[in-house]
Image 1: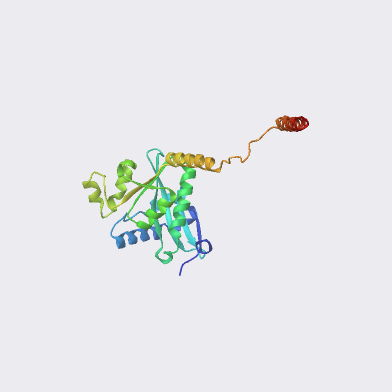
Image 2: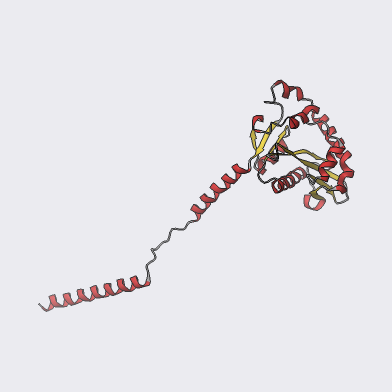
Length: 237
């Protein structure tokens, strides 16, 4: 049975009050990675708690106060690149559209905090790829993502890390996706121009000033009168 997100969950920026869920979230991440046989295997509770304290995490809770989902923000290369990472939904609350709500909230938070940064992510999940596409992300090669070694070292706990290293970080089982605010801004500008041109109305009649209308009317009246006089003259002859 599908759960109505708006009625059943509270999706918000995580705070100090939510650090109590850190260990449970980390265990869920590890368990999910093992079941998939891929992906980031583990994050420490201290790391997740720190993200909450920095205001760089999104958490979803049920109305009963149960942890339901989570995602956090990572910043790279001096705020030039930002990743929404560690998306996880509790097994109990899956298939309810909650992942999309969390990603949307994380996207909004990231755009607010880092409006000029490129947003990126790597994932093997088709569902996450679909959500990212709806948010404006595009599939890209790894060369277009951050080249910060610290980011890629975070993949060491993934079972596919050896593939990443053997290919010199060019390819892996994950798909790289990128949202570039400059590209999106340009796209919106072009679409705006097209919309303006489409909405422009061509007048059915040309606008003629009142003074000009009066002059034209007098001229027509005079011309008609002359024609009548000429006609009467011809008839009398």
